[in-house]
Length: 166
Ligand SMILES: [Zn+2]
Image (tube, rainbow, N blue to C red; front, side, top):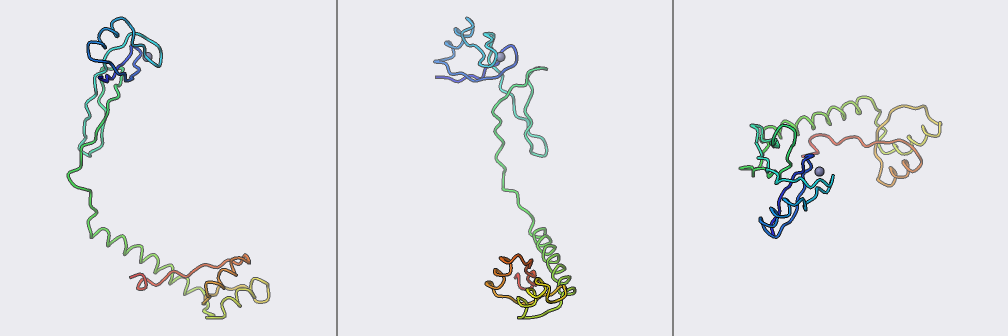
């Protein structure tokens, strides 16, 4: 069995199996190999388009003739080595992220009042209107935090200090 890529006179590309090359020639000559898209019996072997690698490594499909683009199987070349991000760049990225988290933390710390362990209590008071609304921060156990969220009270964790991320 042999597989040929075929193209009809309308430019449809398809693949078909034949017992051998001669069988294809006989069947194609008699119009016994209809295009599955338009039914045209005028088919010829498609020329496999060469894959052209640009200098950037992207694959461009070659063109056969002016009107018909032949779809060939494009096999990208194996990269000689996996692309690697320079370690210096990774460091810069993670430092930038840490700086961002640190800045966010600074902002939260600067704009909230630390109420310590009475945080859940204070937040509830504000939520129920017993205390004036003001931004606070403090400590809560996981259970306390979950209870607050369940009661529809908006709380958010203060980002960890950059040194805690190490
Ligand atoms: Zn066709």
